Figure 1: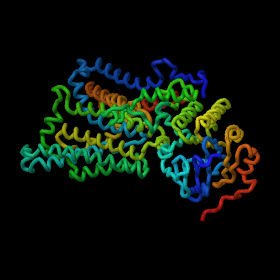
Figure 2: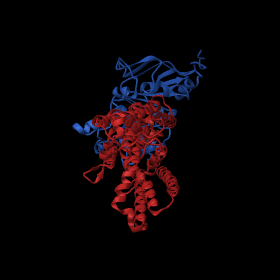
Figure 3: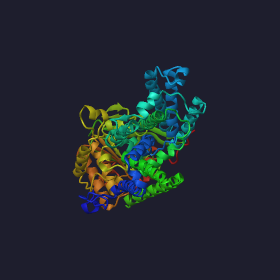
Figure 4: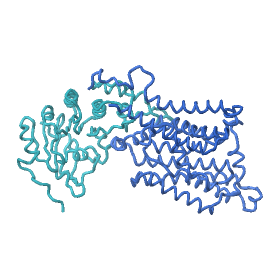
Length: 349
Length: 260
């Protein structure tokens, strides 16, 4: 069909190890290293690089990273999920209320006694996860079957989930959550070193990475994001797949909600309102295109830690936290600009 | 003479809102036959092949395959019957590489308990087989591992055609395969079409380019305003005949019947 001369493209000459595309995913890692390096040097007593700080940053970033994992799947399909923060909140509220209900009477719990928490905690967790997953499923059904734009659908479910959480709690944080949850999960350690939330996040990262990069499910996710009609014509069950993707995002948001509940021993009503934008920013900074079809879990991990490291460094340096917001905004724009540039380079033909 | 046609559409009709895209269209494709499907814009050619390839359901009519009535409700059904299609826009996923596109919807999964449960992709196998698929059709790509959006139009066409040819076992449908190609590449596509026939498959080939059609087809089916107005063997037809049928200068409906 083509003679060899015409087949040589600048981006992939045979034998060459580095391609232009590789630079794209590499630059995010370089930026992260640069931030770490700079802050390690300039922070007093190099406290940025201490194990305590490292551990604390990982712990504090774990929830948003789990949320961003789910968001990655959605954005790779060229959709968007604005409901992740609200679903996180709703899930943690649902879990907390069930735990409180099942673990003892009000009087007992006010005295920090939780006689039935061996039942209450697991059931509460299960209910919380189920609630978030159900929200994800609803997002999927509305987006895929009813062919509604995901932006609108998830905007709607954001209100429903956030409002629902307020209704269930009367607008306040849930008190009297069994403390063992915090002791063992929120503040507990695996192998005495790794905080449990970080461990959970690590497992989630590994599983999501493998699914997205190495399974048929992952490939179909990319295909749908790249050309949904082509995927349909190739026999991919697009509707069913999209429902699964949004359900996964809901489940991961719920997982983050459980982690949040475990860490703070209460279901916080406020405080997750902008998590959706933070997650989307992490995904975009990590190199995932909002147009779908491209992006990686590893990229999302890096994209989550860039703003986290920046904010952390600013705090240690005593810089006003608002500066990290400014920096984050600038990084997002830069990330999208670079993505556009790479696409233009790629499509020079 | 081939007694039982490979594929036959009987009385296919399809309406979109107020427009009757196809009206009672009956076309037969015989074994090892190249049928050129021609007609002006809006004649219903793409609609007909979308119905045959399972992308659209007909409102009325049946499809017979090897003399038996079949239902082609989805693209998967069509593939299951050995019918492959190269759509006008190629239906490739630009962000995926050539190997991934060649195996889209038919991914090779690693064998074994856990791996097949998770549907672990056998990427190396797909790359190797993909390379062989392309080589067997004399298609040269620098790499099967770069996103197809980095390939030229002709190369992308080649991948789409290779996909249909490699998987098709009975019929390959091609919608305007040469529309965006240059002279040399067009010649290659036509050569490929003849090779498909030689390997035992049949081809339905839509094109606006009558000279190209006349170069390779055995039969020409002419559609006009949703109806079949001509079904000629190439040896009996001249280009003028075909043009006259296409534009309605010779018989056929002179206007689209208003739909109540």
